[in-house]
Amino acid sequence: MGTDGSQRAEWDLLLCSGLPRGEEARKKFEEAAVHVTDPWLLLRLAERSRLLVWLAVELSAVEPPTDDLRFLRGHLAPVARLMRRQTEVISAVAARVVGILEEGGIPVAVTKGCALQHLVYTDGSRTFKDCDFMIRPEDATAAATLLSTGGAVQGYYKVGSNTASPLDLQTRLIYARSPDHLPKMVVSTGDDLVAAVNVDVAYSFTWASSAWQIDHSPALLSRTSIPAGDGSLPCLPNPYHFLFVCLHLFREAWHEMTMRKVYLAQLRDVACFAAVLSEDERRTVTTLASSFGLEYPFTWVLAHCDEVFDGELLQVFDMPRADASELNTVMLRGDRMGRWRGTMTDRLTTGDIAIESS
Image (cartoon, rainbow, N blue to C red; front, side, top):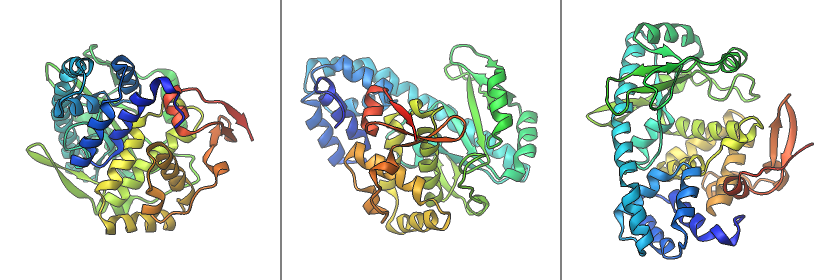
Protein backbone atom coordinates (compact mmCIF):
# COMPACT_ATOMS: atom_id res chain seq x y z
CA MET A 1 0.00 0.00 0.00
CA GLY A 2 1.51 3.31 -1.09
CA THR A 3 -0.80 5.49 1.01
CA ASP A 4 0.38 7.05 4.23
CA GLY A 5 -1.17 5.99 7.52
CA SER A 6 -3.38 9.09 7.69
CA GLN A 7 -5.55 7.91 4.80
CA ARG A 8 -5.10 4.16 4.74
CA ALA A 9 -8.49 3.22 6.24
CA GLU A 10 -10.33 5.57 3.89
CA TRP A 11 -8.41 4.28 0.87
CA ASP A 12 -9.01 0.66 1.88
CA LEU A 13 -12.74 1.37 1.90
CA LEU A 14 -12.57 2.72 -1.66
CA LEU A 15 -10.69 -0.40 -2.77
CA CYS A 16 -13.87 -2.36 -2.02
CA SER A 17 -15.19 -0.81 -5.24
CA GLY A 18 -13.08 -3.26 -7.23
CA LEU A 19 -14.71 -6.34 -5.71
CA PRO A 20 -17.28 -8.32 -7.75
CA ARG A 21 -20.77 -7.06 -6.97
CA GLY A 22 -22.59 -9.15 -4.36
CA GLU A 23 -23.00 -9.96 -0.70
CA GLU A 24 -19.31 -10.69 -0.15
CA ALA A 25 -18.36 -7.24 -1.43
CA ARG A 26 -20.97 -5.61 0.77
CA LYS A 27 -19.69 -7.50 3.82
CA LYS A 28 -16.13 -6.34 3.15
CA PHE A 29 -17.39 -2.78 2.73
CA GLU A 30 -19.08 -2.92 6.14
CA GLU A 31 -15.93 -4.33 7.73
CA ALA A 32 -13.75 -1.62 6.17
CA ALA A 33 -16.19 1.17 7.11
CA VAL A 34 -15.67 0.45 10.81
CA HIS A 35 -12.07 1.71 10.53
CA VAL A 36 -12.86 5.01 8.78
CA THR A 37 -12.04 7.90 11.11
CA ASP A 38 -12.20 10.85 8.74
CA PRO A 39 -15.37 10.85 6.59
CA TRP A 40 -14.40 14.15 4.96
CA LEU A 41 -11.10 12.70 3.83
CA LEU A 42 -13.09 9.74 2.51
CA LEU A 43 -15.32 12.17 0.62
CA ARG A 44 -12.33 13.94 -0.95
CA LEU A 45 -10.67 10.68 -1.92
CA ALA A 46 -13.92 9.36 -3.42
CA GLU A 47 -14.36 12.53 -5.44
CA ARG A 48 -10.77 12.41 -6.71
CA SER A 49 -11.22 8.72 -7.56
CA ARG A 50 -14.51 9.35 -9.44
CA LEU A 51 -16.28 7.08 -6.95
CA LEU A 52 -18.79 9.40 -5.27
CA VAL A 53 -21.74 7.61 -6.84
CA TRP A 54 -20.37 4.21 -5.80
CA LEU A 55 -19.89 5.46 -2.23
CA ALA A 56 -23.45 6.84 -2.18
CA VAL A 57 -24.87 3.53 -3.41
CA GLU A 58 -22.88 1.47 -0.92
CA LEU A 59 -23.73 3.66 2.07
CA SER A 60 -27.42 3.50 1.15
CA ALA A 61 -27.33 -0.31 1.20
CA VAL A 62 -25.86 -0.75 4.69
CA GLU A 63 -26.24 0.67 8.17
CA PRO A 64 -23.12 2.85 8.56
CA PRO A 65 -21.27 2.13 11.81
CA THR A 66 -20.72 5.76 12.87
CA ASP A 67 -22.74 8.95 13.12
CA ASP A 68 -20.34 10.66 10.70
CA LEU A 69 -20.88 8.01 8.03
CA ARG A 70 -24.63 8.12 8.59
CA PHE A 71 -24.50 11.88 8.02
CA LEU A 72 -22.38 11.30 4.93
CA ARG A 73 -24.97 8.82 3.64
CA GLY A 74 -27.64 11.52 3.78
CA HIS A 75 -25.28 14.04 2.22
CA LEU A 76 -24.60 11.73 -0.76
CA ALA A 77 -28.13 10.44 -1.35
CA PRO A 78 -28.90 13.13 -3.98
CA VAL A 79 -25.73 12.13 -5.85
CA ALA A 80 -27.08 8.61 -6.43
CA ARG A 81 -30.49 9.96 -7.45
CA LEU A 82 -28.91 12.33 -9.95
CA MET A 83 -26.86 9.50 -11.44
CA ARG A 84 -29.98 7.40 -11.90
CA ARG A 85 -31.58 10.29 -13.78
CA GLN A 86 -28.45 10.89 -15.84
CA THR A 87 -28.33 7.20 -16.72
CA GLU A 88 -31.90 7.34 -18.03
CA VAL A 89 -31.30 10.46 -20.12
CA ILE A 90 -27.88 9.42 -21.44
CA SER A 91 -29.21 5.96 -22.34
CA ALA A 92 -32.02 7.61 -24.30
CA VAL A 93 -29.47 9.75 -26.16
CA ALA A 94 -27.39 6.65 -26.84
CA ALA A 95 -30.43 4.93 -28.37
CA ARG A 96 -31.13 8.04 -30.45
CA VAL A 97 -27.55 8.18 -31.80
CA VAL A 98 -27.59 4.45 -32.53
CA GLY A 99 -30.85 4.86 -34.43
CA ILE A 100 -29.45 7.71 -36.56
CA LEU A 101 -26.30 5.80 -37.46
CA GLU A 102 -27.91 2.41 -38.05
CA GLU A 103 -30.59 3.97 -40.22
CA GLY A 104 -27.72 5.34 -42.30
CA GLY A 105 -26.23 1.87 -42.63
CA ILE A 106 -23.40 2.37 -40.13
CA PRO A 107 -22.77 -0.39 -37.57
CA VAL A 108 -22.19 1.15 -34.16
CA ALA A 109 -21.61 -0.03 -30.59
CA VAL A 110 -22.06 1.80 -27.30
CA THR A 111 -18.91 1.56 -25.18
CA LYS A 112 -17.49 2.45 -21.77
CA GLY A 113 -19.64 4.34 -19.25
CA CYS A 114 -23.18 3.92 -20.57
CA ALA A 115 -22.59 0.33 -21.64
CA LEU A 116 -20.82 -0.66 -18.41
CA GLN A 117 -23.55 0.88 -16.27
CA HIS A 118 -26.05 -1.54 -17.79
CA LEU A 119 -23.72 -4.51 -18.25
CA VAL A 120 -21.50 -4.50 -15.15
CA TYR A 121 -22.87 -1.98 -12.65
CA THR A 122 -26.54 -2.87 -12.54
CA ASP A 123 -26.71 -1.18 -9.11
CA GLY A 124 -26.15 2.13 -10.93
CA SER A 125 -22.86 2.81 -9.15
CA ARG A 126 -20.73 4.01 -12.08
CA THR A 127 -20.18 7.71 -12.67
CA PHE A 128 -20.43 8.87 -16.28
CA LYS A 129 -21.58 12.04 -18.00
CA ASP A 130 -21.32 11.38 -21.72
CA CYS A 131 -22.00 8.81 -24.41
CA ASP A 132 -19.21 6.82 -26.07
CA PHE A 133 -19.52 4.92 -29.34
CA MET A 134 -17.36 2.83 -31.66
CA ILE A 135 -17.68 2.82 -35.46
CA ARG A 136 -15.46 1.71 -38.36
CA PRO A 137 -12.81 4.13 -39.70
CA GLU A 138 -14.36 4.08 -43.17
CA ASP A 139 -17.65 5.32 -41.72
CA ALA A 140 -16.25 8.37 -39.92
CA THR A 141 -17.15 11.04 -42.50
CA ALA A 142 -20.63 9.66 -43.12
CA ALA A 143 -21.26 9.34 -39.37
CA ALA A 144 -20.31 12.98 -38.75
CA THR A 145 -22.73 14.10 -41.49
CA LEU A 146 -25.56 11.91 -40.21
CA LEU A 147 -25.18 13.10 -36.63
CA SER A 148 -25.01 16.74 -37.66
CA THR A 149 -28.13 16.32 -39.79
CA GLY A 150 -29.77 14.55 -36.84
CA GLY A 151 -29.29 17.54 -34.55
CA ALA A 152 -25.89 16.98 -32.92
CA VAL A 153 -23.71 20.08 -32.67
CA GLN A 154 -19.92 20.06 -32.61
CA GLY A 155 -18.67 21.30 -29.26
CA TYR A 156 -18.64 20.46 -25.57
CA TYR A 157 -21.48 20.78 -23.07
CA LYS A 158 -20.66 22.13 -19.63
CA VAL A 159 -23.18 21.45 -16.89
CA GLY A 160 -25.18 24.56 -16.10
CA SER A 161 -24.36 26.38 -19.34
CA ASN A 162 -27.32 24.98 -21.32
CA THR A 163 -25.29 25.53 -24.48
CA ALA A 164 -22.58 23.77 -26.43
CA SER A 165 -19.24 25.55 -26.06
CA PRO A 166 -17.19 25.50 -29.30
CA LEU A 167 -14.06 23.35 -29.27
CA ASP A 168 -10.98 25.50 -28.72
CA LEU A 169 -8.16 25.68 -31.26
CA GLN A 170 -5.88 23.32 -29.33
CA THR A 171 -8.60 20.65 -29.16
CA ARG A 172 -9.37 21.00 -32.86
CA LEU A 173 -5.68 20.61 -33.68
CA ILE A 174 -5.48 17.46 -31.54
CA TYR A 175 -8.39 15.92 -33.47
CA ALA A 176 -6.74 16.92 -36.77
CA ARG A 177 -3.35 15.46 -35.83
CA SER A 178 -4.77 12.31 -34.23
CA PRO A 179 -7.65 11.08 -36.38
CA ASP A 180 -9.10 8.36 -34.15
CA HIS A 181 -12.28 10.13 -32.90
CA LEU A 182 -14.82 12.44 -34.43
CA PRO A 183 -14.65 15.89 -32.83
CA LYS A 184 -16.83 15.83 -29.73
CA MET A 185 -20.50 16.63 -30.33
CA VAL A 186 -23.44 17.66 -28.15
CA VAL A 187 -27.02 16.36 -28.29
CA SER A 188 -29.76 18.40 -26.61
CA THR A 189 -32.28 16.41 -24.59
CA GLY A 190 -35.07 18.78 -23.58
CA ASP A 191 -34.71 17.45 -20.03
CA ASP A 192 -34.85 20.01 -17.22
CA LEU A 193 -32.12 18.30 -15.20
CA VAL A 194 -29.80 16.93 -17.92
CA ALA A 195 -30.19 19.48 -20.70
CA ALA A 196 -27.57 18.05 -23.06
CA VAL A 197 -25.18 15.13 -23.41
CA ASN A 198 -21.68 15.02 -24.88
CA VAL A 199 -21.24 12.42 -27.61
CA ASP A 200 -17.82 10.89 -28.30
CA VAL A 201 -17.46 8.66 -31.37
CA ALA A 202 -14.25 6.63 -31.74
CA TYR A 203 -13.15 4.80 -34.86
CA SER A 204 -9.86 3.39 -33.56
CA PHE A 205 -9.50 0.59 -31.01
CA THR A 206 -6.31 2.25 -29.72
CA TRP A 207 -5.18 5.64 -31.08
CA ALA A 208 -4.03 7.06 -34.39
CA SER A 209 -0.26 6.81 -33.86
CA SER A 210 -0.36 3.62 -31.81
CA ALA A 211 2.00 0.77 -32.57
CA TRP A 212 -0.97 -1.51 -31.89
CA GLN A 213 -3.51 -1.16 -34.70
CA ILE A 214 -6.52 -3.49 -34.61
CA ASP A 215 -9.20 -4.21 -37.17
CA HIS A 216 -12.32 -4.02 -35.02
CA SER A 217 -14.78 -4.31 -37.92
CA PRO A 218 -15.51 -8.00 -37.15
CA ALA A 219 -16.48 -7.00 -33.60
CA LEU A 220 -18.90 -4.36 -34.87
CA LEU A 221 -20.46 -6.83 -37.26
CA SER A 222 -21.01 -9.34 -34.43
CA ARG A 223 -22.12 -6.95 -31.71
CA THR A 224 -24.52 -7.99 -28.97
CA SER A 225 -27.42 -6.24 -27.24
CA ILE A 226 -27.69 -5.41 -23.56
CA PRO A 227 -30.87 -4.39 -21.70
CA ALA A 228 -31.01 -0.66 -21.03
CA GLY A 229 -34.12 0.71 -19.36
CA ASP A 230 -37.14 -0.18 -21.47
CA GLY A 231 -35.03 -1.05 -24.51
CA SER A 232 -31.58 -2.31 -25.42
CA LEU A 233 -28.28 -0.98 -26.72
CA PRO A 234 -25.78 -2.59 -29.12
CA CYS A 235 -22.38 -3.35 -27.62
CA LEU A 236 -19.15 -4.94 -28.74
CA PRO A 237 -18.88 -8.64 -27.85
CA ASN A 238 -17.66 -8.83 -24.25
CA PRO A 239 -14.09 -9.99 -25.04
CA TYR A 240 -13.56 -7.12 -27.49
CA HIS A 241 -15.20 -4.60 -25.19
CA PHE A 242 -13.09 -5.71 -22.23
CA LEU A 243 -9.91 -5.34 -24.31
CA PHE A 244 -11.07 -1.91 -25.42
CA VAL A 245 -11.61 -0.82 -21.80
CA CYS A 246 -8.10 -2.06 -20.94
CA LEU A 247 -6.53 -0.31 -23.93
CA HIS A 248 -8.33 2.95 -23.19
CA LEU A 249 -6.91 2.89 -19.66
CA PHE A 250 -3.46 2.07 -21.05
CA ARG A 251 -3.68 4.97 -23.50
CA GLU A 252 -4.46 7.49 -20.77
CA ALA A 253 -2.16 6.08 -18.07
CA TRP A 254 0.82 5.47 -20.37
CA HIS A 255 1.03 8.88 -22.05
CA GLU A 256 2.64 11.80 -20.24
CA MET A 257 -0.03 14.20 -21.52
CA THR A 258 -2.89 12.32 -19.84
CA MET A 259 -1.28 10.18 -17.14
CA ARG A 260 -2.34 12.54 -14.34
CA LYS A 261 -5.99 12.18 -15.34
CA VAL A 262 -6.24 8.50 -14.42
CA TYR A 263 -8.57 7.55 -11.58
CA LEU A 264 -9.27 4.53 -9.41
CA ALA A 265 -12.68 4.22 -11.10
CA GLN A 266 -10.97 3.31 -14.39
CA LEU A 267 -9.06 0.44 -12.79
CA ARG A 268 -12.30 -0.58 -11.10
CA ASP A 269 -13.84 -0.95 -14.58
CA VAL A 270 -11.19 -3.50 -15.50
CA ALA A 271 -11.53 -5.49 -12.27
CA CYS A 272 -15.34 -5.52 -12.23
CA PHE A 273 -15.74 -6.18 -15.97
CA ALA A 274 -13.32 -9.12 -15.67
CA ALA A 275 -15.50 -10.54 -12.88
CA VAL A 276 -18.61 -10.77 -15.08
CA LEU A 277 -16.86 -12.45 -18.01
CA SER A 278 -17.47 -16.17 -18.46
CA GLU A 279 -14.58 -18.61 -18.57
CA ASP A 280 -14.95 -18.90 -22.35
CA GLU A 281 -14.95 -15.11 -22.70
CA ARG A 282 -11.79 -14.83 -20.61
CA ARG A 283 -10.04 -17.38 -22.80
CA THR A 284 -11.19 -15.45 -25.86
CA VAL A 285 -9.74 -12.25 -24.39
CA THR A 286 -6.36 -13.94 -23.95
CA THR A 287 -6.49 -15.33 -27.48
CA LEU A 288 -7.36 -11.92 -28.94
CA ALA A 289 -4.60 -10.18 -26.97
CA SER A 290 -2.09 -12.69 -28.36
CA SER A 291 -3.37 -12.60 -31.95
CA PHE A 292 -3.34 -8.78 -32.01
CA GLY A 293 0.10 -8.56 -30.38
CA LEU A 294 -1.30 -6.77 -27.34
CA GLU A 295 0.63 -8.69 -24.70
CA TYR A 296 2.58 -5.63 -23.52
CA PRO A 297 -0.27 -3.11 -23.02
CA PHE A 298 -2.64 -5.80 -21.76
CA THR A 299 -0.13 -7.11 -19.22
CA TRP A 300 0.73 -3.52 -18.20
CA VAL A 301 -2.90 -2.81 -17.32
CA LEU A 302 -3.60 -6.11 -15.57
CA ALA A 303 -0.44 -5.90 -13.49
CA HIS A 304 -1.25 -2.41 -12.24
CA CYS A 305 -4.82 -3.46 -11.43
CA ASP A 306 -3.44 -6.42 -9.47
CA GLU A 307 -1.12 -4.11 -7.52
CA VAL A 308 -3.89 -1.66 -6.66
CA PHE A 309 -6.58 -4.18 -5.74
CA ASP A 310 -4.26 -7.01 -4.60
CA GLY A 311 -5.86 -9.11 -7.34
CA GLU A 312 -4.98 -11.99 -9.65
CA LEU A 313 -5.99 -10.76 -13.10
CA LEU A 314 -2.69 -11.80 -14.66
CA GLN A 315 -3.35 -15.34 -13.48
CA VAL A 316 -7.04 -15.21 -14.52
CA PHE A 317 -6.08 -14.31 -18.08
CA ASP A 318 -3.03 -16.58 -18.13
CA MET A 319 -0.63 -13.72 -18.77
CA PRO A 320 3.01 -13.76 -17.61
CA ARG A 321 4.16 -11.77 -14.62
CA ALA A 322 5.47 -8.42 -15.79
CA ASP A 323 8.97 -7.23 -14.97
CA ALA A 324 8.94 -4.17 -12.72
CA SER A 325 11.01 -2.23 -15.25
CA GLU A 326 8.28 -2.70 -17.87
CA LEU A 327 5.49 -1.45 -15.61
CA ASN A 328 6.94 2.02 -14.98
CA THR A 329 7.20 3.05 -18.61
CA VAL A 330 5.60 6.21 -19.97
CA MET A 331 5.44 7.67 -23.47
CA LEU A 332 6.81 11.20 -23.16
CA ARG A 333 5.94 14.12 -25.38
CA GLY A 334 7.84 13.84 -28.65
CA ASP A 335 7.41 10.04 -28.67
CA ARG A 336 10.32 9.48 -26.28
CA MET A 337 10.22 6.67 -23.75
CA GLY A 338 10.52 7.53 -20.08
CA ARG A 339 9.87 6.08 -16.64
CA TRP A 340 7.94 7.12 -13.56
CA ARG A 341 8.82 6.22 -9.99
CA GLY A 342 6.55 4.55 -7.45
CA THR A 343 3.46 2.39 -7.82
CA MET A 344 0.07 2.95 -9.41
CA THR A 345 -1.36 3.26 -5.90
CA ASP A 346 1.06 6.14 -5.30
CA ARG A 347 -0.15 7.80 -8.48
CA LEU A 348 -3.80 7.41 -7.61
CA THR A 349 -3.60 8.54 -4.00
CA THR A 350 -1.16 11.44 -4.25
CA GLY A 351 -1.32 12.52 -7.89
CA ASP A 352 2.41 13.10 -7.53
CA ILE A 353 4.33 11.51 -10.42
CA ALA A 354 8.11 11.79 -10.77
CA ILE A 355 9.12 11.20 -14.41
CA GLU A 356 12.59 10.65 -15.82
CA SER A 357 13.81 10.11 -19.39
CA SER A 358 15.16 6.70 -20.33
